[in-house]
Length: 218
Image (cartoon, rainbow, N blue to C red; front, side, top):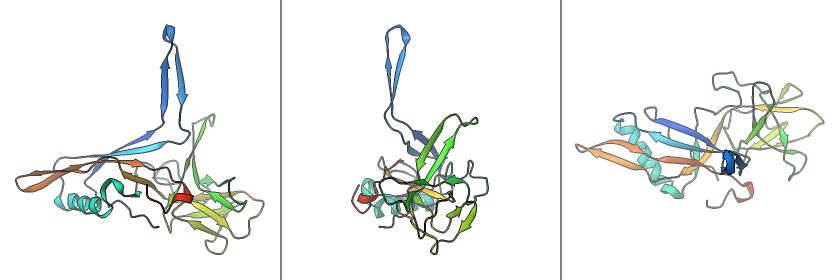
């Protein structure tokens, strides 16, 4: 199933929160015990009204809200804070941006796209599952040399799983753009004033995707 993408509304502002579930327990004497409950982050996006918005943008959201069935729908969101394989969206995308990591649950020729985050001294590392790559933007290299989609590899753009036609004992890397799989966390509210629709607000929450359930309801 192909997921729709949330409409581009240039007059909207968004806050983005990469959320790690953490339990902090206060001990006697002021000591703290911290338990990290999730390995992968979940992102939350809140629409921020920036004054009165153009009606066209608000109606675009209203149509989309009904088209996907409100909070029952699943769709893609283009997170302008973090939507490429590079360390910053302003940097040029290359086929060597990110390593390709094997998916141990599948055959050796099948890999899941990940994005890796490191601190400046490379002491700590975190990876993020890329399950909604943008079609037409993905580049893949083998030992630093770009290889062709179709002839050398294929990609499921609804799961982020790449399959190599003739896998070799080599270093594979990738680069490209990606979307975030989300659903409405809150109902969209629409503000009407002087017979005109002025503002709307809502929250989106990232979904954790299980490829074997991709066609099921959330």
